[in-house]
Structures are given as C-alpha cells and as structure tokens.
Image (tube, rainbow over all chains, first blue to last red; front, side, top):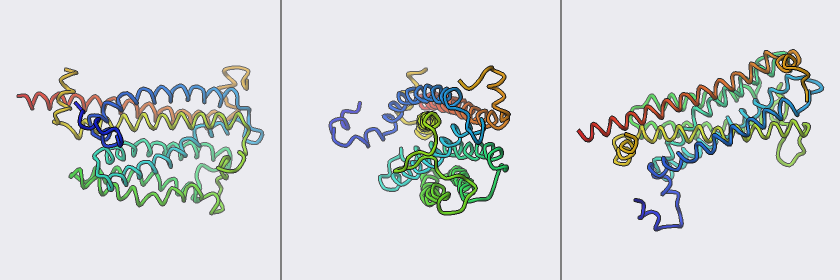
Length: 254
Length: 57
C-alpha cells in the first residue's frame, strides 16, 4: 500500500505524517503510553503517600506538590509542543501539524487549570491565601486563557485552513508567556516559592520527595502524550471523513 | 510508613480537604478527558461508517 514512500528510507517524517499512517501508528502508541502513565502514577502515588515523609514545616499539605508541580510543568511543556507543531504547520504545511496542535490544546488547558486549582489548595495552608495576583499565578492564568483562546478562535472560524492558521499564529505569539511563567519567581518578588529543582543546581528537597515528584511528572507526561495522540486520531477521522482510507477502515469495522 | 490507620491516612494530618480536594479534581479531570476522548473517537468512527454507506449508496 505504501511502497512508494517506503522506497525512500532516509527521511520518514512525511510518511508518518500522512493521515492513514499516523492513525495506524498512533493507534498502537496510545495504549502503550496510557499503560506507562498508569504504572508510573501507581508508583508515584505510592512513593508520594507512603514513602515520602511528613514535611517538617507544612505537615501533610505539602503532598499536593506531587500533582501540582507535574501539572504546572506539563501546562508549560504542552504549550511549547503545541506552538512547535503550529510552527511546523507554517513551514512544512503538513496536515498532521495542525491536527497535533489542536489535539494538544485541551490537554494543555486541563493541565493549566489543574496547576491553578492544586496551587490554590496548596497556597491556602502554606501562605494563608488561595490566590494572589503575583507574577507566577497571573502568568499561569494567562496560559490557561491562551489555551482557551486557541480553542475558541479555532472553533469560531468555519474554514478549516484559515482556522488552523489563525489559531497557529495565536499559539506562536503566546509562546513568550512560557519563559515569563518559568522565570517569574526569579524576576519578580513573588509569594510563590522558587524552583525546588533546576538545571545545574542541587535539588532543595529530600530524596524520597524528589523521587515521588519526578515519577509523577513522568506519569503526567505519558498521560499527556496518550491523551493528545488519542484526540489527534479522532480529529484525523473527523477531517478525513469520506476519504478512501477512512471508508476502507469503516469497512473493516462494519 | 507514615500512617497508623486508614483514618489517619484519610485525615492527612488535618489537611484532608486541601490534599483530597487537589487529588480528587486531578482524578476527575483525567476521567472526564478519557471518557470524552472515547466518546469522540466512537462518534468519529460511526460517522465514517455513515459516510461509507452514503458513498456507496
């Protein structure tokens, strides 16, 4: 079926970027990433609740960290990947680029919301307030609005190509917000604490706590990949409706 | 082991509302997204079957 493309072994991106090939491959990848996410989450929760000790200052409230930090990281990371696919869409004009950007947005929005929600529930016992209009929290709220803006703009434009382009521009412009979130605790005097771990510096939290947080971060990462790929498959089917390969696929199931 | 009993575990040192409020909403968000994704994929598949029948007929 794909003899023509497999004859060129060098650069396979365009091969996998073809909707039928992507649909097939992602169909295999989703269960693998979902299983990884479930296993990692089980290990991470065990480490977080049963191995990591009670914090000397914050008591048990600090355990919110094991979902808060991964959600916040993923909210930023997913945005960068979404913008990357949007950029690739402008450069290479492959159909799958816009599909991936669209598939990532709801998952990223969910992560941004969870970062804010868990942050509020952690902030109350730790700082005495659910919310403060400081740089870290405000820029994370803006991140949530960027995701929502991306989805709203895309659904507001009927023509699919124009919708992809307009939303893609929004995604790219919004990228400036990500370093602002990340460095906000260094650039401004913030209620939010500084990073517990960062490149080139020893972590400032105990080893079991760090292990739980990193395993949970991996679990969130795998989950985001599974969710985005799964959504991308649905979008592929929706967009390719009526195409020969989709009809053939429907024939297999009927 | 941090907890002497289930009661102690659920109580979270007095922070039960904050800790379970955070974890509960994370779990809810994941469940809603997974259910939504399954429904969307199933809908897209059904539509592709209909498209095939239309195309054939």
